[in-house]
Every structure is written in structure tokens, then in C-alpha cells.
Image 1 (tube, rainbow, N blue to C red):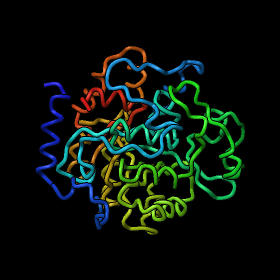
Image 2: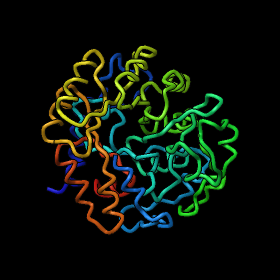
Image 3: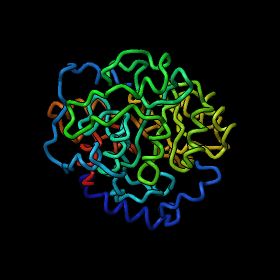
Image 4: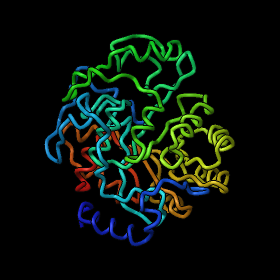
Length: 338
């Protein structure tokens, strides 16, 4: 049976298994909730990624400068599915908002990208906070502003005001983005709250205190997921706020066993498995601790960009993965019939 035909049944099973967990009520957080970027970099700098054939095409005014609010959540998957160990519906994580360098919906790591992801119905948006010279966390993947804005400079040597004064490069995207600026992590969390979870990549800053403060200050403890390959950073974050949702990153069974043992008192909500990992061997271990497994699918994204089949996404879900993190959430959602 094709994966898209399984989705309605999976949705029904999730709802039946745990109505409370899938209800979407974020008022009370659970007490203890359980690199293929180089491929995109290899694309020609002038390649306008605007393929949009097939699937559902939405009006960019829902998320660009003409938008007056964050779109209403259109996702048919119960919002609590991610936190429900019994809910095995295939989920989608939008890399850098609505997509990184392969994205076609909105400039990466922006509030507009979050709005676009919610409009399309993704489950999770991934984001990249890094510190400015004056101690603010801005949402920007690179160490410099050169690629994504019309300015130049190293983020850590610029103030928030200097970064936000820059104009974003957005000419390859349909829609109007002249008003968009590099956002703070607080702006991203606020925009996503109620519409999608936020996977916060903590690898780009040592200011764990600022990340945790941003999550607490925006009241997104049940929406934000602290994500890093550093066990030490997760330890620091949990010491500051024990209710944090977390994601660990592993490449093999030995590392997975070590980290699951280390975090036995506070199991991760999500486990990212390296793209080269043995998914068949590792996903059952992830399921056993009530977590969801995730992997990056940028290689498949590139294939799809140049005419490849969406079947590459289906193959990965079929290997037991719960979440695909993609630069083309529109294409993965097309596969899922969402």
C-alpha cells in the first residue's frame, strides 16, 4: 500500500490511542517529556529554486509581507502526536523554517518561513539561533550575513540593530519579502507557538542560558525542542529548566545506548539519526524509550529538485523513521497527501 493511503488510518489510530496527548492543550507541559548541507551548497549560486509542479500550491500572501497574522494551523495531524509515544503518524520537519538553500517558499530562517511552514501544515520548524555582539540571539544559519542578506560581516561582531538593518536576499521566491528582516529567536518562537513545534539547533552558540531564557520568556516550553549534538549543552539546559523538551543526535547503536542511558531520567523527545546510520537497527531502540526518530533528507531533496521521484522520502519512512527533516516540506507533504 502506498504511504499516502496509510495516513488517514494512522491519524485515526493516534487519536484513539491518546486523546489527551493529541488534544493540542499546551497549558500544562509534561512533567518529564520523554550533514548533508554540503549537498545544497554544491548547487550553482544562480540556480533559482522555483520548481513547484504537482502538489498543493498556496498563495504567498499567506506568509509574505502582505500577511497580517500567522496563518491558522492547517495540519490534520493532532498537535500532540509528537509527544505521544503511541502516535506513529509520519511527521515533517521543515529545515530552516520552510526550507534551506533548496527551499522555494520563503527566505530561510525567517518569520515568513515559519508562517509558510504553518500554512502548508508542517509539524516542526527547525531554526538556527546564534549570538550577536550585544548578546542577542538572531536566527541565522551562517557565521556571516553575506549569503542571506545584502550586507557583509560576521554575526558575532555585529549588534542586533546592525543585523536587523540588513535587507534579505529574496528575489528567487514568489511573493513580497522586502519587509522581512533577520529575526530574533524570540520572534521565531512566538510566531510558531500554537502552529508548529520549533527544533532549536543549539550547536551554533554556547549561550545555553540565552536559549533557555528565550524559551521560558516566550512561554514555549511545550513547543520548543532543545537540539544539539553536545551532551554537555543538554545537561546545562536541563539544569536551568528541567522541563525542557530535547533532541539528541547519534550515528550508531553504541552512541545511542550511551546517550539514552545518560538521559534515562529525562528521555529525549526526538532522536536524530545520522543519514548513514542503520535505521532498521536503531529505530526500534528509539521507539522503546517513547521517542521519535528523525533524519535529514537533503540528498533526496536534491534528487527531487532535479526530477527525482518522491519515493525516496517514502523509502525512509518505510525504514521506521518518524520524522523527515527537509528543505522541501512542500514535496514531503505532497507525498503524504497532506
